[in-house]
Amino acid sequence: MGCVPATATITQPSDQAYAVMADEVDFGHFDAYWSEGGSVVVAEQIHSLLADAASGRSKKFDAELLGALFSAGLVKSEVRSPELRGEIERMKSLKGGLPRPRYVRTLAEGTPYDEPVYVRGNHKQPSNEPNPKHYLDVFGGSRIGAEGSGRLEYAEHLLTTSDFLTARVRVNRIWSRIFGSGLVASVDDFGKMGAKPSHPELLDYMARRFLNEGWSTKRLIRELMVSRVYRMSSVPGEKVLEMDPDNTLLQHMPLQRMDAESLRDHILHVSGELKLDLYGPSVDVNTDDQLPSRAMPRNGPLDGAERRSIYQSMRRSYLPSFLKVFNLPDPSAPVGARQVTNVPAQSLALLNHPFVHQQAEAWADALLALPGDEARIERIHLQAFSRAPTEGEKQWARMVLAEFKEGGGEKTAWFSLCHLMINRKEFLYVF
Image (cartoon, rainbow, N blue to C red):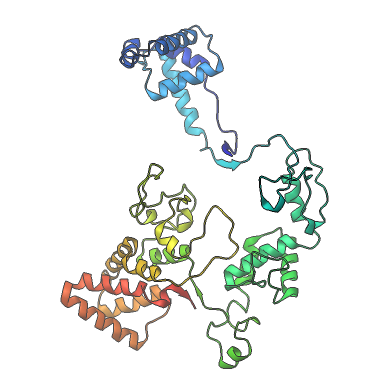
């Protein structure tokens, strides 16, 4: 697996430019550099490369090597020639007009062959006969006649099966992320050991519509989120709980805790620090609380450069600690349904994590810009819960502020209130 340019954006430099630059080389600096290192043989070889360049006999690889030497500063050239200045300016102009190359991970095709079956999963006991490339038995088990690996043909077969199985799986996963559980509860298992669909006709209808609309995830999410089911109250009636305690019949919107990324973004949003800029490179993960090692990546900012969690760099050995506590899944494997746990480490993270303290302080600074405590109490509830505070919550907030003002002043009091708001259950759950 490697990285290759997604588009051809690299233009080869003119070999003639290096021929001109070779005439301008400061060999005194060059020889001094390499004589100190004791690599006379290397110096002689590069002298030969420069001589070939000056005479116009450079090959493509030689030109690339000289370009690397000039870029690294190992070979210096004083720009005295007008011809060289023109070449340099032309190079800068071309370089400025080039789009930034994009890279994608890809697999290179190797020599195709039929692999054996490992008996009972033991790699030391391969089957006597190789297993020809074919589709899964559940899809009919027909042979794949491709000359290469067969991955493309296999993918196309999955998308064109008459039973819409792939579309069903995708629709069910999207449904489970929005409503907390799938129409098939066992999101990762549609086989005999998995659960039966609660609404098979609805699942089939949505799968066919999803397929006919070009596999558009956006359209499906929009359709689900404007539906009556999504807009239901999350507070069920007493009779509903008696008749349908598991909410199988979709009598109300289930109560859900935010996932790790949404919680982090929510904290940044209420503090006023969240940046909604689109696109750009990933932000390095903060490793202040990680164990040091030789493989440790470059340390990133505590607040993730105030960008949404989708832009956080994900390294298998150095995942963001705050997100891990709230069930961030392993990024190296597909996960149909995330685990939702309720453990003491989550409460401790909200109480003690430096990121939470940093954002609580920023939130307090923003609130202090408003005139009067009553306006601030109103604003803090609107930001945290998207609703106005009750009279009881107003009294509680005044009591908290009065208690903390005695011990540390107004800023400390508002920091403490903001910190307490982040730790309230309503802050973590979608009602």
